[in-house]
Every structure is written in C-alpha cells, then in structure tokens.
Amino acid sequence: MGFWRKLFSPPGYIGAIVLAILGLTPADFARWVSDKVSPEGLSWISSDKARWAFVLGSILLFAGTYYRNRGQRSPDWDITINDALNYIENDSRETFPPPRTMTIRGVSVPASGTQHQAALVRLNQRLTFGELDISGHREIVPQPAPRLYEEVRRKIDVEYWTIAQLHLLNCFHCTTQLPQTYILSGDNHPNYYNLRMNRNQLRRVWPQKALLRRLWERWVLRKPRIYYYQGFG
Image (cartoon, rainbow, N blue to C red; front, side):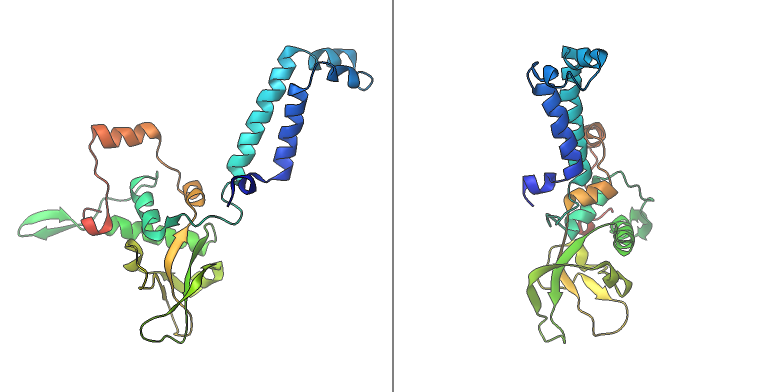
C-alpha cells in the first residue's frame, strides 16, 4: 500500500487542508472575509497568534488522521506469523505467566515454548473475533501428495476461524511447504501456509513497549530475546 493510499481519509484531511489554508494564506485573506466575520473575529483571524494556531491545528489533525487510518485499508502483509508471535512475546506490552518448569537430573529448568504457545492462543482469539487480518496461500483440495498450494495470496475470512486454528507447531518458523493452520473437524476444508499479517494492525492490538523500557531491558538487564526453538520461552 502506497504512502498516499494510506493517507487517504477525506474527512480528516479536508479539515487539515482548511486549517493549513487559514494559517498560510497572506494577510489579504482577512479582507476577503471581512463582510462575513465580526470585527473582533476578523482581528483575531488576521493576528499572528491565530495563524500559528491554524498551522499547528492542521499538523495535529493531519497526524492524528494518519495514525488512526494506517493499516486499515488493503493492509500490506509485511510480517510473517512467526515474527508476529516473536513480537508479541518479546516486544509488546503483553504479559505472560512465568513458564512452567521441568526437572532434568534434579535441576529445574523453564519448559521451552510455553510463553510462545500462550501468545499463539491469544492470537487465535483475536483472529476469531475479527480484530486482525491475516493472509496465506490456500491449499488445493482434495489433497494430493505432496501438498499443493495456490500461488495467489488470499486474505483469510474471519468465518474460517470457526472451523480452523493456527497450527500448534508450524507457526513458529518460516515454511513454504507445511500448513500453518489445521482444521478442527472435517477434511473438506483447505489449510493455509506462509501466513502473513500487517505490522501496524498488530501493533494497534498489542502496543509496543516504550523505547526506554526496551533499552533498559536490552542494555541494563541484558534480557535475551526469547525464541520458540531456542528455549526458555
């Protein structure tokens, strides 16, 4: 999605343009509206204070409209499902209970993958509620051996998640062959692989940690990033 396409939102930007015009037009503009505005209002409009207020208001309205509308139309599929799960676990403000422990030769160690599995469950819930968009390559059914998938990427309808879920293992790494969804019941529904999401939508649902917190965890606490297959998460 191009920059201007992301910015397209008529009501907000029309208002921003009007404010910008009021702030940036020459002082002669005041005379154009002199017969439509009271002397007190005309005096304020023509003042430097009003012009700066109009310009600042247009900037704030423009930025606010862009922020509210980013990622809502034809989203770019710019983050893989495994990177999305890593983001939820490591970079978002979402909190998870401590991982379960298991005893190996008398030593208790964190069970690998438990927090990523919790992130997968929460992502499944958001998809079921229709709060996030996701796309993938649809399996061609009936299933031949080996599996065949369509070349075109499709947005997955929210109704699909009433019969399917994200795969409990294949979503944690990039794959071009294995399905990343599985069907809950029945065999006549397609799976999807190479699942991708929109980063902006993901960050609206799970806001990113503050910059100072990320720097503190990385450089002061020396907290390592947690990956599913590299343990301790």
